[in-house]
Length: 238
Image 1 (cartoon, rainbow, N blue to C red):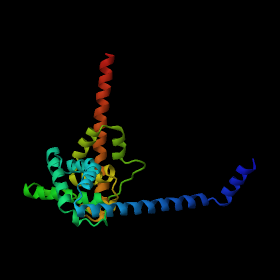
Image 2 (image 1 turned 60 degrees about the horizontal axis):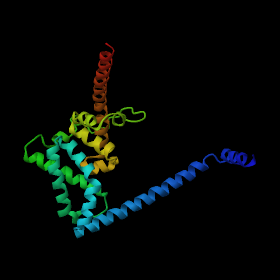
Image 3 (image 1 turned 135 degrees about the horizontal axis):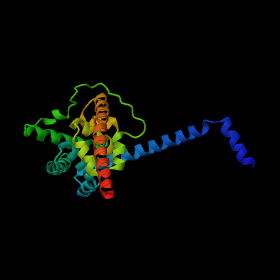
């Protein structure tokens, strides 16, 4: 079997060649995706300037679930979120000319939604989005050890969406927001900083502290569920 033997020899002599090729390929794919995203953003910007109704329909269809989820978690009330959802798209329609396509559209969209939440909270003289400020008032990154999937990711993979929502709503709003944007909407930390208008260090701090606060809530819910299962089994055996 000379060919496999030669390949094996080549792999031993040039052990990093495969990694280099893979790295170059990954960079090429990343560059291509970035170019596509830029083209898409530019197309959206042109369409919004024209107030293209078909474009708006496509954008609503694409982002409606993400936007509604974000507003629901941010406000904690479905009916309020629904009103703000409608208002957000009205702002997109009326102020579309302000979007220049340089940033991702979803970053711009979520920024509009967040500002509407802030405006509403001020009108209602609620705790405003002061409640979205880190309660510790500490912007230093708070590192916690995370080996493998985060507690949030582990929980989402095993539990129902309703239970995930219930646990999230028990967290402080500032933590809840970054967790939703990071793990539900898969935004980069820099993008979350752009939406929340917070320094990157603050976003990191809220993410780490949110994960730390989430862990005991998850364990509490799991223990309660396990206890219910044991009681059900015991009842069936009796």
